[in-house]
Length: 356
Image (cartoon, rainbow, N blue to C red; front, side, top):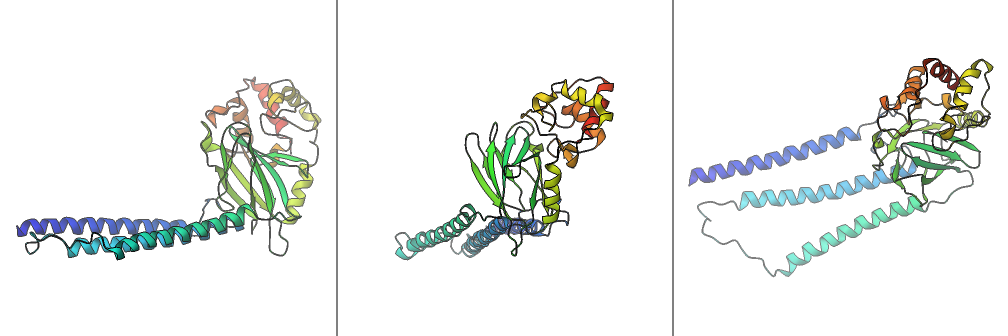
């Protein structure tokens, strides 16, 4: 009998040790996630907020984690105490544990305490939701319409007359000169979700519904995000880049985007290839007969650092491969392979490279 109890005790200790190790692993993982992101923001992290909405969500998350962590520690400690204190032994093998059925004090405790916890969490969450969703729009705000497509992002600046894709440019916002960016979120086909972890929480883009969100980045740089709602084959590669520019850089970017495409007479052949193929049915290029809306606007294509919604660097080789065989970069992409001859393909790529 003593050997049996010894074995049972070893099992209890082993399980308790496993739980402690698991808890330590969770805390270690949280600590690693909480580490500062690299200077270039190449790793999106909810633990490194750089905008007011993201900061509010981060603070709320830490508050909820602290409360739930405390609950876990209390419950785990009581459970471990009960296992050790009241484990089976020769001395109590035939004893009935003390019965507490009908204890008013215990029933009030396990009813009132959870209600208070839920109320506190509810009020804290409601406060953050109200502060983010009902924030007033200042006169200095930049307005952008973001439209989710399978599988890329379209960005329109109605007040500025600018249309671009996949790479969102916004001005930095500081307390002295607040310049938040308010986004109107639409979907052209199915459900999408706009998420840049360091700037704001997730917000869905739903067909036939208008949603909105806002950001006010506190520092310049590139912040990465992506679609956070499964929207089809290439959902994982529906990436986006938010470029937070200084006021001067943002004004310069606006000036460039408002310019008509520079016509390079040396690339007449490539332009003819572009204007006489199916390219014009999906894409738009200012100053040409290309007015398509199904694909990204290409007027300032070479001003973007990536193609295929961030799936590849914007280089001559990748651009050629993307036109020739989109599936090689983005399997399941809705862009068809153009099946051009090598000469036409080379001419088309040279023409696209003039679109600054």
